[in-house]
Length: 151
Length: 439
Image (cartoon, rainbow over all chains, first blue to last red; front, side, top):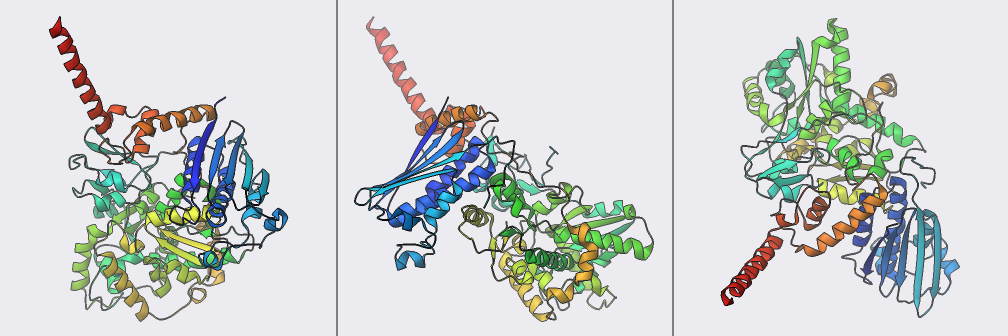
């Protein structure tokens, strides 16, 4: 069975390229013919992950893995790590600076939004080391449109 | 699937095979093959960008000639709001419909009136707490087509209200038949169009089976004739049906943002220019605009006044529309279109056919085969110079890699790979000749 792997480096605080990796990932999935509902959910989660890396991390990468049954998106950074994951997961909580908020980011919905859109969501983080988020999206039969999960 | 009949076409005799249109097409629907441009039908959205940039005027919008109105015993003209911005020193806005009547039309029904009704219908949709967010305007057919091709996830967000052109044609025909006691098939409704996309929408409607419009006549084509009639008819004070005239807000639809203004929604966003529309649709797809309630996207910069087949410069026309609108009586949409009137029209102005995605992006129907092709594309792309020069006939190196993987092009179409290959071959020839000399 063939599998596709693509890696995208994300630079901290680089708002010029922010969003480009998400666009490219979305394009790949559409080319592969992944179901529109999955693409939509993945777009939202992927964009959140990318912006999180730009705003909060000291740099990292997004890894896209596409298999026959599922799409996996991994966000990995080199720090600073999240001290309290449960708090960070709650909607409205944000550590974003005033500058970033002025740009319309950092509303504190990121992690929760990612978790809501992914079929499986796993986060691990260690202060001083970094954060790794793994999101799995099941690819359903593209002929049977299932829109029940659209939020 | 129904055959998609495009309006944007190529005049082969004029095309010199340059890369102007190739580089500007927002959906990468053009390739240069055999020294001529070729439009990939499934991908073309009829936005008309290529018509605008072609220096040879080889890209044309197929519209109906004015003479085609003679197919019908009775003729109704449906002027797009944009038409009102085409003439300088327009002393009386009504001289435009009067001019059309003098050209041989039996009736003139403003598409701006259709826009008033569409605005009211959209306002009602927005009151429904279950309506999709954001609701996306259905007015610009090129944008609808862009959504079908590139943003199928957003199809359900498109408001199910027919375009002002369709609404105008439906009401105009009905009224004309009732008033004059004639059969519907004896009446021809003709849209005076600023763009190719509308001409396509007449032939292949999006969201409903059949168009109520019988033909689309290019605005620039009738400009000369009509401006003559307007000039000559300055003393013409013949009666016009006031119910067929659009309100100031309806005429305002000619400019980008006019629709948002008419529906009076605060959380609305208007974007013009197909490239920018694509960017904002992507932001909507990424859920970056969670508060947005209404999205008005227009393919042409400036809105319909910037259409590819209008006479006047977009900024000049835009400004004229602004002035005309400010001189008309102020009237809000609720006063222009009553709820009763809207309810009576209800089914005539609603979509009756689902909008389906157009799967042109998909590399293969089989998922594993698509994955394999994706690998192959990546492999080919690495060999290409990444200059996106367009000399090969594909718009970018990435597009060429995809074309090669799909069997539509060859690696040697790339001038740089060809140059490398030629120099390698030359070197080999020298080596061979030196070897044979030694023997």
